[in-house]
Structures are given as structure tokens and as C-alpha cells.
Image (cartoon, rainbow over all chains, first blue to last red; front, side, top):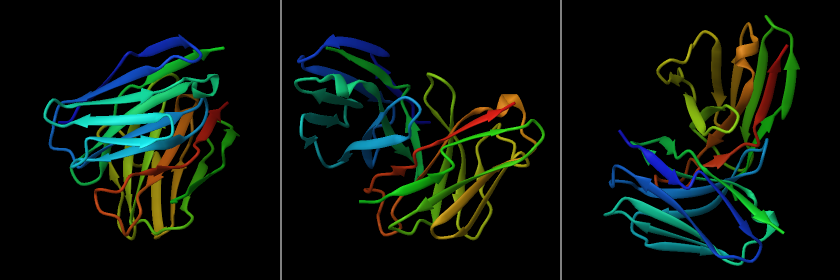
Length: 111
Length: 118
């Protein structure tokens, strides 16, 4: 059974800092890994999707890496802004369909 | 990109009544949609997998008679919370994946429905 863990559970940093969020998974036989953002009371917004054959994906100030062999992924946020404050979730498919989520990292960027 | 529309965004209902939540894929077809429940400050919990034209697959511990799922077309799945009680109050989110995609395509989520049972 796939299990996904995210650390830290919460993170508070001043504006402008670069930061790293961590995600680990127990079963390395994954097809892909997806990072999402969730604002309070809202649905999930997909940030980055990394295929199993890829080592990283970039979108603007976001960079996600994937190391299947070690069961880890990181989300790097450069030059953080107050608007980046949200909960960040990573998820991997289990079997053919079901997504397994981590518990999320609640990020606060202080002006 | 793929868009999933979920309605209503919030609903308040009286205890004992039923509430229907709709999930639509706007620009793609989805043979499978997923329904999640989220409690405050917790991650998403998969409730059931909705299959077009067949019965939904429920996760262990989810009451299929309380949470009725219908997936009558390739673009619409509905979740009906029957005889709602205050403990059913929660945030419900649906998701879908593009029919033409393989497992290498990501999932798109709706904006969620906040259900409050009074």
C-alpha cells in the first residue's frame, strides 16, 4: 500500500526567501507525481506533474524534482511571495487510478 | 487545459434532507471521476470512484447508501448525500482525468463544495 509523507507540516518564512518542501513515498513504482496547491476553502490547483521518467519539472518560480529510487520529491519555491501562502500537497497514483495524498505542508509567507 | 466544474460551491441544509453535488468535466470526457472528503486542516480522503455507466466503487468505511453516486454521462458525475446529519458537514471535492490521457496525465480537481448540515 502506497503511503505519502510530507514534511514539514507547516512552514513560516519571510518574503523573498527560497524554500523547499519535501514529499516521500513508500512504493517507488509510480507512474508520476503531482504537486498541488490548495487555498483555504478552495479546491486543488495542479502546479507540476512529473513523469516517472523525468527528474524535474519547472514552472516559473517553482521547480519540482523526483528521485524514484529513494522515494522522494521536493518542491522548490524561489523568491517566495505572500501570495504563495497556501497548503501544498503532493500525490502519487496507486494502481491504475487512485491518487494517494500526503498530509500537506501549510506555508505562510510573511511580508 | 482540462477544467472540472463543481456546483454548488457551498450549501446549507436541514438535518434529514438530501443534497446533490454536481461535478462536470467541461472540455474533456471522463469515464472515471473521483469524490473526496476533506475535514478541516486535514488532507483529502477518497470516498469513491465514479464509473460512467456502472456502479461506483466505494472506499472501505464509506456508506454507499448515504453517499449515492451517479455517473450517467462522460462529463457528469453527481454525489447525493442522503438524510444528511451534522456529522456529514464537510468539504467535498471531485476530480477527473482526461479520457484520452494515459496514467501519465495528471488529475484536475473541482473547486469543492462546503456542506453544512444544521
